[in-house]
Length: 368
Ligand SMILES: Cc1ncc(COP(=O)(O)O)c(C=O)c1O
Image (tube, rainbow, N blue to C red; front, top):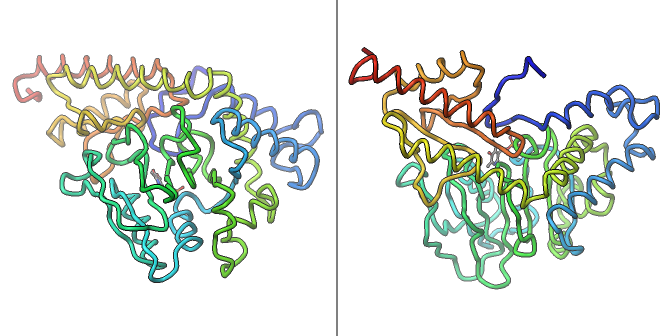
């Protein structure tokens, strides 16, 4: 693995090395069938085994109760921005949205096509650098929607919000799914594009309570009804077989790492080290409010765009790739998802130290 570098990409992102190695073999020949995983029929025994095992492992690792369906859909998390409201909202209904970033705003924009949206809180006043502590729900919303981790702004809900009793909670968990234990029973629907924490781009994990599956509109094209996919273990049409296979391998890897508790400890450790360094640094500072910091996407700046660009190039020359922040925040973003190795965080801190020392030597403005 000598030619692999540290990949801080926000997504698609780093995958566990044992998973990639296994995939390399299974691409050629899956379980001694003489056929690679990409070439198997989704209706055949070999792929069915893969699919059912992925569902079983997903259920085990997140302790998903039996009254929830586990679906593997396509169209990315962005498709859920409209699929959820299409299923659960009719004109005149209201849904509550907690607006904590660009992805929440996109979800709101799509929901507005199907019903009314009540913004229950927003942190847009300070460029989404914090998670609001106060949430004001409307009277009886059809559901409440939030984004558990804001990939772009580096903020994360420390615990799930509590909507009024009986209101289903819908979560876009694209960038922190399975990074820590989750009490699925508190949710009506959880969705996540796989490409950050649990697999490749092209497959979206949907965990949905069965009564919501039933409640969904029947007036939609079949592919847009959750019941279609729930009735057939996501095989109504040809599902994203490779994505499901790889996600299944990632689930196995998560189980081998001590499950969600094991990953949470590792993720806290990685992010903790990085934030501790940022809090000590003379040059860099974290942009997210301390009580809202994400364990997945650590956003930071020097306060000087030229210096930021210099650091990104400096880090890249040391094998640390993908650190450029999103344009709406600027600076740097270190995405350190589940599969990101702790050694990469140590390497980033070492590069920051080296850059700080160099800036000190170069003069008070950091550029000599
Ligand atoms: C929190 C969040 N939601 C939704 C999306 C959109 O996901 P997709 O590209 O799978 O549609 C992203 C992508 O980065 C994201 O970070």
